[in-house]
Length: 271
Image (cartoon, rainbow, N blue to C red; front, side, top):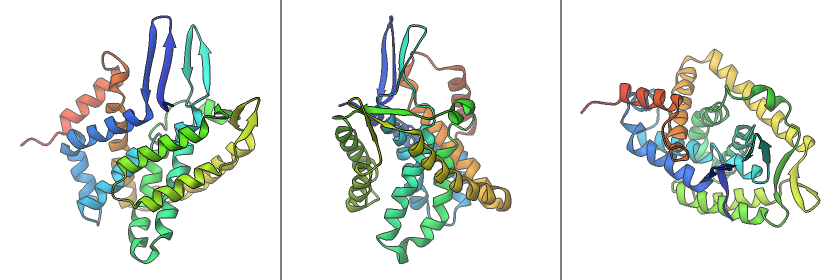
């Protein structure tokens, strides 16, 4: 089955984008446009690791930023003649999943990975969590049920995510990806009338976990100058990649898109 990053149907037709295509378009924009900006260069220069390592974790954040949408494939809403998938709060799930993956990756070789883990864990989680930080805050507070999918569809969704991660996380061992995907299969989903949902108890548990991460993120943001600069830079880089990876959803850029394109042009490195 197709796993969506965007889905909207009206009497004028259907607009959609698969999660696979969105992530690949976002990574392509990062490679072809965003890496040629002073923002990227400034971020690389702020890190103690070489550019290959910094790029590995930026691509990781881009790959994971919308992975939480896998839990929203049945979360349809109807409003003013439009049927759409509502992804409110997906960044909390994406952050939780990214951190779960990071912990699996670390445990496979703690001695040789602890330095990268310490330097990039909070940056990655912060970037993913805040790539929609200003959108729909009130509706996130009221989130109590997420309709995941039909009962017989979840395994296909997990397989689709597995293929996405295998293709785009070349710097990570297959066994780490496989272990992570196996944990996805063991998540606590509730069966209701042939459908799978995330109930309020499960959602609250995930949100509490991410809230604890967020406390540490903000301690670092307020108390560590270098972290604050890196978080601002990496989050803006992810927002740029996310939007550029979404451009195919509309025939012309939105006003926000025009501003982001202007931003890229302004900070583009002149050769």
